[in-house]
Length: 164
Image (cartoon, rainbow, N blue to C red; front, side):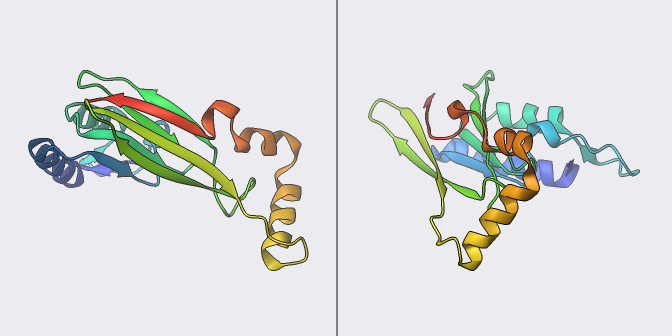
Protein backbone atom coordinates (compact mmCIF):
# COMPACT_ATOMS: atom_id res chain seq x y z
CA UNK A 1 0.00 0.00 0.00
CA UNK A 2 0.85 3.66 -0.23
CA UNK A 3 -0.82 7.05 0.11
CA UNK A 4 -0.83 9.94 -2.36
CA UNK A 5 0.54 13.36 -1.41
CA UNK A 6 -2.92 14.98 -1.73
CA UNK A 7 -4.42 12.39 0.63
CA UNK A 8 -1.57 12.91 3.09
CA UNK A 9 -2.15 16.69 3.07
CA UNK A 10 -5.88 16.13 3.57
CA UNK A 11 -5.17 13.85 6.53
CA UNK A 12 -2.75 16.32 8.10
CA UNK A 13 -5.29 19.17 7.88
CA UNK A 14 -7.99 17.04 9.52
CA UNK A 15 -5.64 15.85 12.26
CA UNK A 16 -4.63 19.47 12.96
CA UNK A 17 -8.32 20.38 13.31
CA UNK A 18 -8.88 17.45 15.70
CA UNK A 19 -5.90 18.59 17.78
CA UNK A 20 -7.31 22.13 17.98
CA UNK A 21 -10.75 20.81 18.99
CA UNK A 22 -9.39 18.37 21.59
CA UNK A 23 -10.88 15.35 19.81
CA UNK A 24 -9.42 11.85 19.83
CA UNK A 25 -8.78 10.17 16.48
CA UNK A 26 -8.74 6.51 15.49
CA UNK A 27 -7.35 6.02 11.99
CA UNK A 28 -8.69 3.10 9.96
CA UNK A 29 -7.14 1.81 6.76
CA UNK A 30 -6.72 -1.41 4.88
CA UNK A 31 -2.92 -1.26 5.11
CA UNK A 32 -1.03 -0.73 8.35
CA UNK A 33 2.45 0.65 8.86
CA UNK A 34 4.26 -2.57 7.95
CA UNK A 35 2.51 -2.96 4.59
CA UNK A 36 2.79 0.65 3.33
CA UNK A 37 5.71 -0.37 1.14
CA UNK A 38 4.34 -0.33 -2.43
CA UNK A 39 7.00 1.31 -4.60
CA UNK A 40 5.64 -0.06 -7.89
CA UNK A 41 4.50 2.31 -10.58
CA UNK A 42 5.68 5.77 -11.45
CA UNK A 43 3.43 7.97 -9.32
CA UNK A 44 5.76 10.67 -7.95
CA UNK A 45 3.21 11.67 -5.30
CA UNK A 46 3.28 8.21 -3.69
CA UNK A 47 4.17 8.27 0.02
CA UNK A 48 5.07 5.24 2.13
CA UNK A 49 5.08 4.36 5.83
CA UNK A 50 7.82 6.76 6.97
CA UNK A 51 6.04 9.81 5.51
CA UNK A 52 2.68 8.81 6.95
CA UNK A 53 4.17 8.05 10.36
CA UNK A 54 5.88 11.45 10.40
CA UNK A 55 2.50 13.14 9.89
CA UNK A 56 0.65 10.98 12.41
CA UNK A 57 3.33 11.43 15.06
CA UNK A 58 2.93 15.22 14.86
CA UNK A 59 -0.64 14.93 16.12
CA UNK A 60 -1.34 13.80 19.70
CA UNK A 61 -5.03 13.39 18.85
CA UNK A 62 -4.24 10.00 17.21
CA UNK A 63 -4.60 7.23 19.80
CA UNK A 64 -5.03 4.20 17.53
CA UNK A 65 -4.66 3.00 13.97
CA UNK A 66 -6.80 0.04 12.87
CA UNK A 67 -5.71 -2.08 9.90
CA UNK A 68 -6.45 -5.48 8.48
CA UNK A 69 -4.36 -6.20 5.36
CA UNK A 70 -2.38 -9.07 6.88
CA UNK A 71 -5.49 -10.76 8.41
CA UNK A 72 -3.53 -11.47 11.61
CA UNK A 73 -4.39 -10.29 15.13
CA UNK A 74 -1.49 -8.07 16.20
CA UNK A 75 -1.12 -5.08 18.54
CA UNK A 76 1.94 -2.88 18.09
CA UNK A 77 2.91 0.20 20.11
CA UNK A 78 4.02 3.07 17.87
CA UNK A 79 5.81 5.46 20.25
CA UNK A 80 6.41 8.99 19.05
CA UNK A 81 7.26 12.52 20.16
CA UNK A 82 3.61 13.45 20.79
CA UNK A 83 2.86 10.33 22.84
CA UNK A 84 2.47 7.78 20.08
CA UNK A 85 -0.43 5.47 19.37
CA UNK A 86 -1.38 1.79 19.20
CA UNK A 87 -1.56 0.03 15.86
CA UNK A 88 -4.22 -2.67 16.04
CA UNK A 89 -4.25 -5.16 13.17
CA UNK A 90 -7.17 -7.52 13.07
CA UNK A 91 -7.93 -10.91 11.64
CA UNK A 92 -10.59 -11.48 9.04
CA UNK A 93 -14.07 -12.93 9.03
CA UNK A 94 -13.15 -14.42 5.63
CA UNK A 95 -9.98 -16.29 6.65
CA UNK A 96 -9.08 -18.37 9.66
CA UNK A 97 -9.69 -17.75 12.56
CA UNK A 98 -12.97 -16.22 11.26
CA UNK A 99 -13.12 -13.64 14.04
CA UNK A 100 -14.00 -10.00 14.44
CA UNK A 101 -12.58 -7.42 16.80
CA UNK A 102 -14.54 -4.84 18.75
CA UNK A 103 -12.93 -1.59 19.87
CA UNK A 104 -14.09 0.62 22.73
CA UNK A 105 -12.47 3.96 23.57
CA UNK A 106 -12.75 5.24 27.14
CA UNK A 107 -11.50 8.66 28.25
CA UNK A 108 -10.76 8.59 31.98
CA UNK A 109 -10.68 11.54 34.35
CA UNK A 110 -7.22 13.02 34.31
CA UNK A 111 -6.74 12.52 30.57
CA UNK A 112 -5.78 8.85 30.28
CA UNK A 113 -7.32 7.09 27.30
CA UNK A 114 -8.07 3.36 27.42
CA UNK A 115 -8.61 1.25 24.32
CA UNK A 116 -10.44 -2.00 25.06
CA UNK A 117 -10.26 -4.50 22.22
CA UNK A 118 -12.00 -7.86 22.25
CA UNK A 119 -11.74 -10.61 19.64
CA UNK A 120 -14.97 -12.52 19.04
CA UNK A 121 -15.76 -15.67 17.07
CA UNK A 122 -19.21 -16.67 15.93
CA UNK A 123 -20.80 -19.74 17.44
CA UNK A 124 -22.80 -20.92 14.46
CA UNK A 125 -24.07 -24.50 14.29
CA UNK A 126 -21.64 -26.76 12.39
CA UNK A 127 -24.22 -27.58 9.70
CA UNK A 128 -25.11 -23.93 8.98
CA UNK A 129 -23.49 -21.95 6.16
CA UNK A 130 -21.44 -19.94 8.69
CA UNK A 131 -20.37 -23.14 10.45
CA UNK A 132 -19.32 -24.78 7.19
CA UNK A 133 -17.37 -21.63 6.27
CA UNK A 134 -15.49 -21.82 9.56
CA UNK A 135 -14.61 -25.49 8.95
CA UNK A 136 -13.41 -24.79 5.39
CA UNK A 137 -11.31 -21.81 6.56
CA UNK A 138 -9.71 -24.00 9.22
CA UNK A 139 -8.89 -26.79 6.75
CA UNK A 140 -7.61 -24.38 4.11
CA UNK A 141 -5.26 -22.59 6.51
CA UNK A 142 -3.28 -25.57 7.80
CA UNK A 143 -1.92 -25.88 11.35
CA UNK A 144 1.02 -23.44 11.15
CA UNK A 145 -1.00 -20.76 9.41
CA UNK A 146 -3.90 -21.19 11.84
CA UNK A 147 -1.62 -20.60 14.79
CA UNK A 148 0.00 -17.49 13.28
CA UNK A 149 -3.24 -15.90 12.08
CA UNK A 150 -4.93 -16.25 15.44
CA UNK A 151 -2.22 -14.00 16.88
CA UNK A 152 -0.48 -14.26 20.19
CA UNK A 153 -2.53 -14.06 23.38
CA UNK A 154 -1.14 -10.55 24.00
CA UNK A 155 -2.57 -9.44 20.63
CA UNK A 156 -6.13 -10.59 21.14
CA UNK A 157 -8.19 -9.31 24.09
CA UNK A 158 -6.31 -6.22 25.22
CA UNK A 159 -6.60 -3.10 27.35
CA UNK A 160 -4.26 -0.44 26.01
CA UNK A 161 -3.54 2.92 27.61
CA UNK A 162 -2.55 6.23 26.07
CA UNK A 163 -1.69 9.20 28.27
CA UNK A 164 -3.01 12.42 26.83
